[in-house]
Length: 200
Image (cartoon, rainbow, N blue to C red; front, top):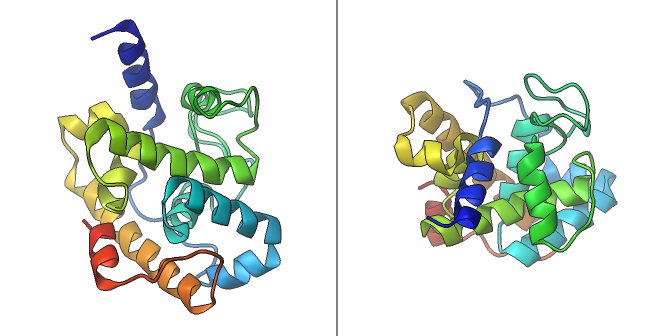
């Protein structure tokens, strides 16, 4: 394995820390209302969804679970935005966040920036599809990789973690249905095939 590949693997493993035992209580079950109250967030989710071909419900579910939409949410051991520990809307590890910035052609960007966090989630699912061959529509697998890291996922997933991801997969489907109903941006019709894939 080349040095660059080893570096990427290390960054991915560092991203997946602190998998909680149960789903956080969703800030809201009505993502349409949340997006209406925060038009900047809505535009960011639309953009990230279109760029990475990851559903809006997926992006919102990950951010809700990770930070409950709190810009300065801190993971275990995090002190501030400069901490290497998980921080911000997407609870990204600083090293993986910096990799995301470089990979997307950015020179800087805060983890407390909602638009960047939405883009990070989409980027991560897409990056992991390329590395693992698992379609990004399969929420359960990709959330587990997001939290455990690629290495942790390959070594084996505890049942408790898989149950958590499955619960969140159902939540993502629910949000996509609601967003479709309220004609949110470019949401595709959540047909049975796409919803089944999201729960794999």
